[in-house]
Length: 177
Image (cartoon, rainbow, N blue to C red; front, side):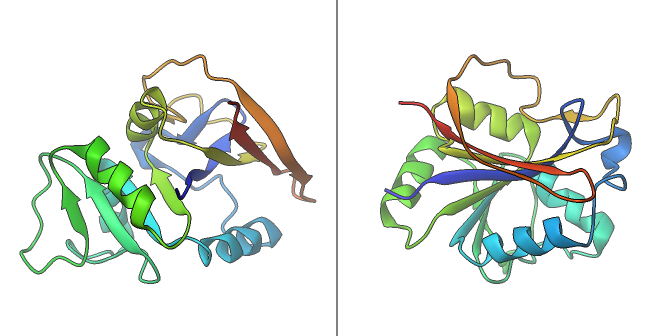
């Protein structure tokens, strides 16, 4: 069974973006981004909620386009409207069944790119296996929290830690069994 890996930048105060989807304080180049792009090559599928998918529109992604061309992308939403020839799969019912099927049949690890509420929902259903957090030394004060509005007590074990020269701390956590 393939793992679901939440690989995401997060501020020191726990936000994956600030107000109005601001990500300008996170690094967009350098060694931390190079390492992230290297990890991206290992993922077979990308999972995201509607808001994360639509975030791409502000950065030039046309509706229906695949934001991760090297992966098969799935958007979990009951309300998103995309062209009939969309390059992404819309999952609008039985999401846990679709995720479990994907974990059984996928040829590689599954990238959870967000967002906060969707990640919190997945965590509450025990569907996140690894957290890969790029903890940036910035404070947003408000925005989208790492797990949205979901609060959880889940045991994770630190499996890897790396401090970059720019102050970003990469941490990998595995769900404790």
